[in-house]
Image (cartoon, rainbow, N blue to C red; front, side, top):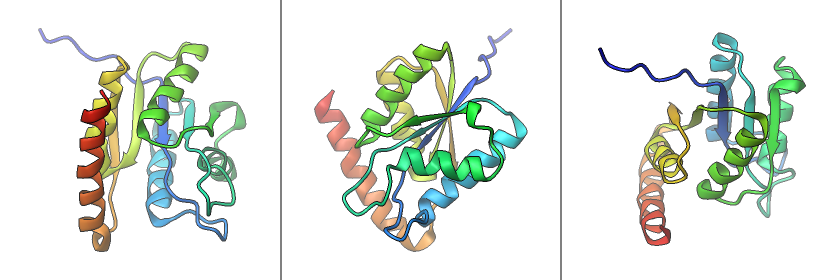
Length: 159
């Protein structure tokens, strides 16, 4: 009989751009919507990851927590990670939060084209995880996939 994986006990939502006017980019809105839908089906703590870019009015992690709070997710279920600048740091810093709170297995929420690399990074850090990808915007398919290909190259060079 095959061994069943333990269910996830925390969600990690990877950041994307917060627009200068203080609203989520399309990618971030889709990730947040997926995270909210998953939370409503399985209410587990949520780690919101992402630092503040030069043109962003707030750190992505802070913005995402505020957005989820406004949608009814209780503050006690939200963890902010607002230092990271890339996916490697997102996962590394989220793993610190997991250790501090005793979480064992994550569901990583990101865009569909990004799930494989995010999970490869989780494996690199020894973090048990599964992934869920929000659908990406069709008009950005080429840009997103070329950028992701370059990010894979960076990941392999940095290991």
